[in-house]
Each structure stands twice: as C-alpha cells, then as structure tokens.
Length: 467
Image 1 (cartoon, rainbow, N blue to C red):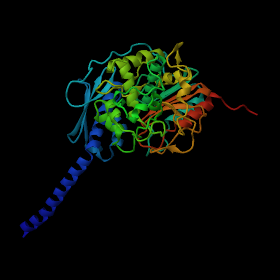
Image 2: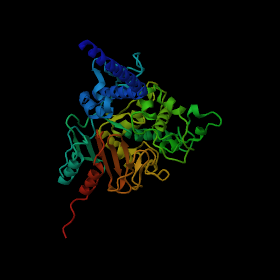
Image 3: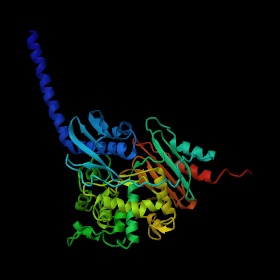
Image 4: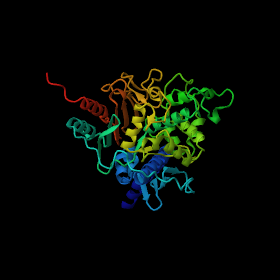
C-alpha cells in the first residue's frame, strides 16, 4: 500500500520535473542572446575594474553588474585571474565569456580561447599630473555644500553611488571629491561620454583636412549604387540623424549590446544595419553611428588598436594633460568609441575645458575653430547637438527612454557629455565652468547632479549682498 502511494506520488513529480526541464530549456533558448550579453558584460566590466581602474571587482559586480542581471544574478559565476590579467564568467557553467586586459588598450571581450590580437598593448604615459598630487578640497563652505549635494544619498532604494566630482573654474581645479577606494588617478568607466571623445577625434581629422563634415561618410560597405546609406554625411553620424535605428532600448538585448558583446568587428556589424528613416529626417540615439565614426578614426590611423589609441593620445589627450584615459577597442582593432572609455574626473574636466576654450589647449589648436559652437548647435527639434547634449530644450523627453533632454536649473548655454549610470561632463561657457560627475547610479532615481551644479554656480557668485 505504502509502495503504490509512493509510485503514484512519483509520477506527477516526474511529469512536473520533465515540464520544468522543457520550460527551462525554452527559457534558455529564448534568452540565449541575453545570457551571452550578460556574461560578456560581467567579464569586460570586472576585467576593467581590476586592471584599468584598480578598484575591487567584487564590489563593482555588486554595485554595477548584479543590479543589471535581473533574476539571474544568483547563477552568474566569475573568476578574476590576476596573473593572466583576464576575467571569465558564465551562467552555471554555460554561455562562457572571457575578457583580457591589454596594457594601454583596456580590456577586450575575446571571442573564444585563442590568442588575443595586439596583446602587447601600448606603454602607459608617464608624466606628472598638472593639477598636482594633492586632493583639491574646497575652502568655500558653499562649494563644500554643493559637493555634499552631489554625494548625498536621499533614497536608499535607489542609491546614487557617486564616485567622483571635479569642478574646474576659469581653467583652475577648485574642488574635487571621491568615494572611498577612488581618487584623482582612478579611471572610471564613462560609458557614452566616450561618444564626445570620439566627436573630438573626428574634429582633429576635420582640422587636419582628412574628413569633411558635409561629405558622405566614407564607409566602404555603403558604396554600392542605389544604397540609401551612401548619402549619410559625417555630420549626420555625429548628430544621430543618419536614419540608423534608435539602437539602445530598454532590456538587455538590442543592437547596441549585441554589437558590443557578440561582434568581434563592431563597425562591420554597424555597416550592415539597414536604415529606419531617410538620412537627416529623424533623430535616433545611435551607438551604431558612433561605431562607424570610430572606424573612420581607425581608417585614418592604420586600422590597428595601437595606432588608433596612439593617435588619440598624441593628438587629443597629451596636449590637454590627460594622463589616465583609455578608449577600449574591439577584436578588429576599432575603438569602441560609442561607450567604452575610461577616464578620471580630472581628465574629463580638462576635456571639458578644451570646449570652453574653443578647441585650443596650451596655445595649440586641437579642434577646428568654431567646433565648440558646432557641438552645441541643435539637431532637428531635439535637445541633442553634435556629439553633446544641449540645454536648448527643456520640455518633453528623449524618445524611447523617457528621460529629460536638459537641465532647466542651469544656464541655457550649458551643454554636456552624458553616459549611462550617471556620467556627466557639464560645460557652462557663460560661467567658464566645467563640472564632472562619475558614479554607478544603476537603479534609477537620478543623480541630483543638476541641482548640485546649480549650487556650484550659485557658490561662484558668492552670498547675496545685504540690503
């Protein structure tokens, strides 16, 4: 009797387990791309944390990657191999991904276990920091209060996790603050602030006469007669009105994440993408466009990772005194200029100053005359310029993301570089001001940087006179 009960009990369980196995297999098949992207993201991010930023990879996993993993965080496994300078990750042993550090080039998502191209990398720049070795803490209590605002944590459910703030006024570093474990020499992943660096590299090529803004972008894959993409100009790629699709949508799987984590040649993938709209008619956030701009930089510098990185250093970073900035590349040697730059807050403050000074640094012209005004000139009816966001539109929101265009609490002439999870380089020409904010605001709720920057502007004007 007892025995037959046990058989009756086992049968439904077996059926249930079989159903669960089928369901699990279906989930895995349906989410294969998402799981590959997840492990690629974990490996690359933790490799850069360990070997580029020099911060604790376990902490970066907890603060940045685990919140992005939705329901699979418990199943992600990763190993940081310091002697080999690589990170491997998987989901319960499946969907493996490997990221390898190359000196001076950052981390590379390696497709497979084979040899890594240009593994020797590039020697680091070695010169003293022009802002000096000491931390610049503000003496002015109003400025200190503004930094307090930037580092405040008003909502425990949505931690801001501000890591670095630097304030440059009239070219002078007047205030900076860092979270524990971070400092003036810590390069932080700046996400799409990298697009603004790519825009500057295009500016260098325009100044050198090697590209023109109004010329059709010289992308080999677009040259067939009758290809509508043949008409897309360099300017339209910079402005994101090329007609390529809005490619960074909610959720882990979209053209941008596929390109970054699944494609060894990002520009080739971008060049295969068909248009959603006629060029020049519609704005759409475009990582694909910035992958193609990165390819134009590569084509002008020999087509290797080391060549492109050396060009960025020699023509842009070194003349500004930027010492700790790297733009990572893909396996084909093309800069990941859509979103994989690492920079310190001080380096980004210097980068912002270049735009305040209309492209001149140390008496040397880096960008074409008028390039800063071009950068903040409006695209169609949006709050986007050419490689920078503007403060020219304060109503409505960015399509798809439902995020505000600008910062109404700041002057109208403000423009800014912006990256995921709260990376900002805010440039205010009327105040001769650059404010940099870097952090890991992964879980929504905002960064508060608009209010903090407004408080910095107020502090510069001093207390109101007594009547």
